Length: 353
Ligand SMILES: [Ca+2]
Ligand SMILES: [Ca+2]
Image (cartoon, rainbow, N blue to C red):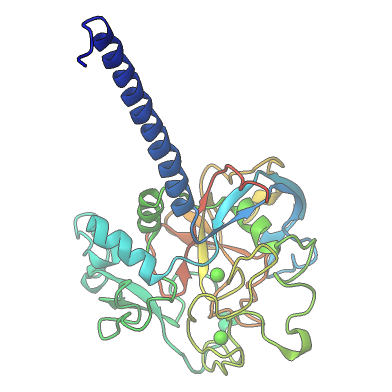
């Protein structure tokens, strides 16, 4: 039997309503689950760092060589997400493959911009560490011409020891030979940012209170090395007692209390804040973001940002900066093979299980 003319429009409207409800539901589903998927992708490889109040810096270790670590002062940070490892070659390659980004070390400098620089220093490249005999590092000052640093043309993130080296078997190693601008470009592409110095130290302490090391009180508990740094006569002989005489793959040592790897040693990690050795004397207590400009009176040159955590080159005497309170500056133009980075991202916090 045919539908009567008065019933057909009702069925048509019903069909339209059912269709509309279906597509609205489908759209909500795609949006909701799509967001879930994006959110989980964005947070993949990151851990949640709960906010809190802690003693930042150290008045104990602020001896003549490390005065910049004091005074210890109470600081509060909000919760945030943090990469569980230093950014690796594999991760940085994805960024370069997606964007075609060329790092600073891969580009020559202009003689017009740097009229006083020798021609060999205008080539693209990075500062590379060279083992050096017969040097007392304590007599070398803190200027930029330390004898164990050699500018090496062609030393880039894909050739981290110079043009003859490569990263073919180093995809799980931290990416090296980047400048401040390079790491910012990566962070922006990844939808993340660099940590503030306070966020970095809060995270490095892993929930422990006022401990000298990321893992606790003793440097080598039960004789075990807990991080990748230098053992031996710097800058000549590294005995590699911790298992590595060079940079190590990420996750080669245990994570700290928050599940973060290599917050001590392996590579230094760039922070967002400008560096000033006396900033702690005037630092705000609530989510400090560093001084207005980076400056280190013991050095000359360009503005410096904070780097944290020490590196495979830090020994137990001269450097001794693989501790959570240790801090240093790095100028914005330098790329080198012992400084890397990791990113953070703002909330929301993960749902409680
Ligand atoms: Ca080592
Ligand atoms: Ca590190």
